Amino acid sequence: NGNPTVTANVIGVVENQAPTRHLRFKLPARGGAIAGDPAQDVCKVALVERHKATGRVQVGFAHGFGFNVPCAVASTVAHDSHHMLVVGTDDSAMALAANELAKASGGMLVVKEGKVEAIVELPIAGLMSDERAEVVAQKAERVLAAYRACGCYLNNANMQLSLLALVVIPELRISDLGLVDVTKFEFVPVLEQ
Image (cartoon, rainbow, N blue to C red; front, side, top):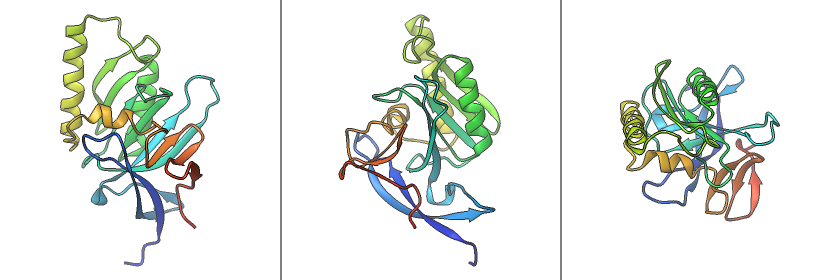
């Protein structure tokens, strides 16, 4: 097709499973930037360090969310370190999701086509709510409905997102220091040479 591509190490989400797969995909390179490829169900993932104000952001790719519109999801429930995770098909949606979630002091959020569709605010350490359980449950259901509106029909999408950073379970994870091949106990580059 004449368009340049690069080979990326990609976190493969496995529905209803904690382990991920270490996948490789050829992704399009446009104007010096590498984007996800919704046609291959590959989206961008960013981990934002949120405990020491380092400003560190690690970026990689994930497969298996099924997103088919310009969207992003974000969560501060990200086992075990609970940094902010953002996954999306669109950089501006990812930025909006991260910024809005930061304003809420943490939680879970979905942006679809430039608009916040649903949010569960978790202002206590980004992990707990100070609202009544019924209110949180209603908001959580709206978040899951927003995932579905973006094309994601994973059985427990919030849990799958929260496990992308769990660097103690194979195979491939993202951390505040980079992409981790848990099977080999080593960092791997996002893009292969």
